[in-house]
Image (tube, rainbow, N blue to C red):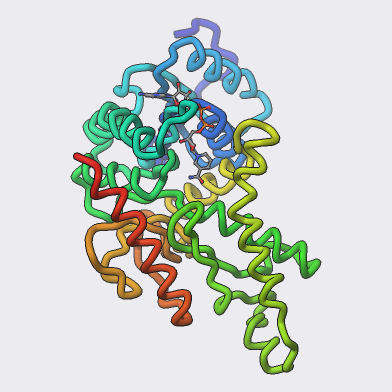
Length: 332
Ligand code: 6V0
C-alpha cells in the first residue's frame, strides 16, 4: 500500500459494477495476439495469463503491463499456478505442442490430449461457472476433449472453429467483388481446416443473395471461381505459416470478437465449434464441429437453420465422420 495519496477520497470505489475476467492459457503467438486485442478493445477488467514457461510468461505480462498508460484500465496478472484464473467469466485455451518432424497428426493429438488433462481440470476448479473457449488445434477434437474433461454442459464449451476460416472467406469474397468484408455474409462450417464446407447458398452481399441473384439474372456464375476462393481459404493458413512461421493477428481479432459477443451478451451468430449432434441431420456420436451458432452470456444459445443444398449437407456429414473417426482412436 502506498502512503502517498495523490487523490483525496470523496467516495469509496463502486463495488456494484460488473467485473469481467478473462484467462488465457498459453502465451505463444496466438495467446498473445488474443490478449493484446482483448486489451485494446477494452473487453475485460482483469486478464490472467498462464503458461508452462515461467520466464516467457513473466516477460509477456510485464510487456503488456508497460502499455498501461495507453490502454483502458485492466488488471493484468500471470502465473504458472491456475489459482490466478480464479473467478474467470471466460477461459481461452491456446496452449499447444508443436508437431515434430515426421510426427503423425494422431500422435500430436495424443500429446495435446495429455496437455489438456493438465489444463482443463484446474480451470474448471477455479472457475466452475466459466465459458471455455478452445483455440488449440486440432480445435474440433480438442473442444470435444475439453467438454469431456470439464463435465460442463455443452453450451459452455466452444471451439473457435471456422470463425477464422469464415473471416478469411469474407475477405476474399469482398476482395473479389470490391466491397467491404463487413457487408459480406458468408459462412464456412464443418471441420476447421481441410474438410471445411463453404455454404455458397447462404452468401449475401449488402442483403443481396449472391447465388440466387446470379441464377435469376441467368449469368453463368463461375463455379470454378467460387471453388477456388474456398480452396484459397483452406490454403491460406498454410501459406501464412510458410511465410511467417505461425498465424496470429487474424486469430487474435477473431477470438476477441467471440469474447465480446459472449461477455457482452451480443447474441450474434458466429460459425464456431459446438456439439453438433442432432443439428443438420448430424448423427453417429458426440461430435464438435462448426455451425452458425448464436452466442451470448450463457455460451451457445442456439444453431441457426441455414438452408443447405444437398451437396453442402452431404459435405457437412462427411466432415463430422472425419472428426468422429479421429475421436474414436482417443482414450479420454
Ligand atoms: P506457440 O507459439 O508454440 O505457443 C504455445 C504456448 O503453449 C507456448 O507458450 C507454450 O509454452 C504453451 N504451453 C505448452 N504446454 C503448456 C501447458 N501444459 N500449460 C500451459 N501452457 C503450455 O503456438 P501458437 O501460439 O502459434 O499456437 C497455439 C495453438 O493455436 C496451436 O495449437 C495452433 O495450431 C492453434 N491455432 C489455432 C487456430 C484456430 O483457428 N483455431 C489458429 C491459429 C493457431
